[in-house]
Image (cartoon, rainbow, N blue to C red; front, side, top):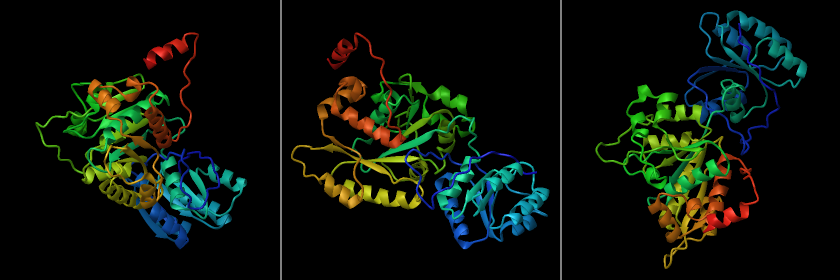
Length: 422
């Protein structure tokens, strides 16, 4: 018997990129078999299988449509998900009835068809079809359909992972990531966690004035113990909405990891936190590449010089090729306007990257240095500093949220604002 999972049918645009606000949660480790009738659909499914959100799924594609599926499962167990392309109406319903006799319990079925008819859709739902997607389909339509099967409406939303990386060492990517996370938590009122992935030299603990006895190293070196309760014990609370998974910042051991070393940590954080900000160190290894490609949104922090331009361009090209169904990475320019330093203008930088920077943050060593030495965010040092608005702008672009938390006003608000300014 085919399992029932109700989905809302909408006509999808052809091969379009997801809108800014759309967030598709990754699929778990499942087996998916697709039976296509056209080469175009087979190609779309093949491209979908290369998407990061189906990275854990095992996908197999065959031609032949419904008859091939029925024949295949006469003597073989069915996978977690079956994707079937069908052109006909009568053959489709009859074929589904036949498929149900050879289909294992719990298998979910996605149908790709060309008939846009609500009566047909109701018949499909009555037969337990999980989703009906209107052809022609693009890779993102297939990704969305399969991933949504495992994101129940009543379940807690799966967290969005934001990766922040520097195009070059010393460009201030950690400072930017920590202040952006602060804006996400304070101004957008989202529960967020900062994961400091620079285990040897991480600065998140210093920037947030935290010195927790445990942190992310305890999770990475004990992958068998990683679960929600274990991660919760490792988190250090910075504010009501912001937590920290700190790096040990010690050199008593060597931090050599395999490419999947952080997978369990990221998966657990996704299940408990709406927003996860990864502070990724400037190094190139299997796990840093995997963390960047697997993130929902990426921010590259660059200084306006030639080496940063080259590295930003290389990162852009690699990430756009590896994430064809995602938004391109964002980037910002930092430390702009250092006295007597020759710089590449923002317009020239944007022309080479073929993308405009989100913001250009000026070089202000006095306030940024004071914040770093005091273990504070820029908003705590100067409530009206112009960079605070830039951090909020980055936060809004990365999260897809435009609304900010409205502060409750009172008779004493003007006086309180003046005191905060001082």
